[in-house]
Image 1 (cartoon, helix red, strand yellow):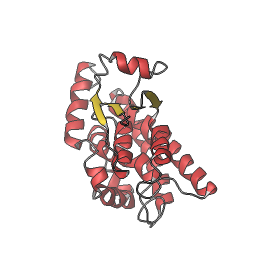
Image 2 (image 1 turned 90 degrees about the vertical axis):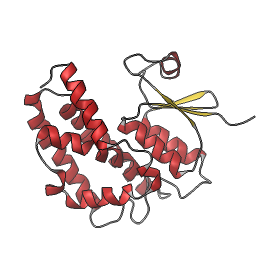
Image 3 (image 1 turned 120 degrees about the horizontal axis):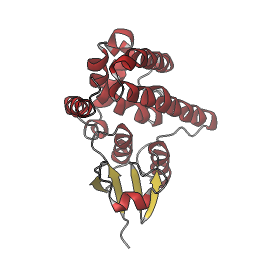
Length: 220
């Protein structure tokens, strides 16, 4: 029986981008299904009945939810393809998971307060975002990637947000590069990888979507 692999996703989701990058790194073919989150499909509601959120990876009829968990799953299932995304050393693997979780909370959650928050909330949120990014830049140091010389788990967790920096900066009137130049150099290095460049959304298209979204909710 042929292997069935379906990704339920939304084009601008930084969390969905993670899964797309991981699948591309493993050179694994799949069927992509774009979800309208204002009108969620029956398949999405069936495959993720708890949260009803994307991304969801459906492997031979079985759903895997939450982007970081999906990336780990991809790494384990297709472990014969490409270098591993997670380190083999248990301590280093634990550290990678810690920093991926940090990205979720200190970049993902905070970034949401910028693009979907009221104007008076953005100033506080952008300060919190920069604090998180500075921590990540310190962890990165002078390494090519978070794991050293090899593109891996933490890089996949963070790089999709680079596509959103333009929107954060435009709404908050600041520049990430001014305070985190090494992080921007890292991001540009990541984008040179085909797995990343072909998987992330265009920053200007994200911004246009957010501007229209904010207008529809009268957030400005």
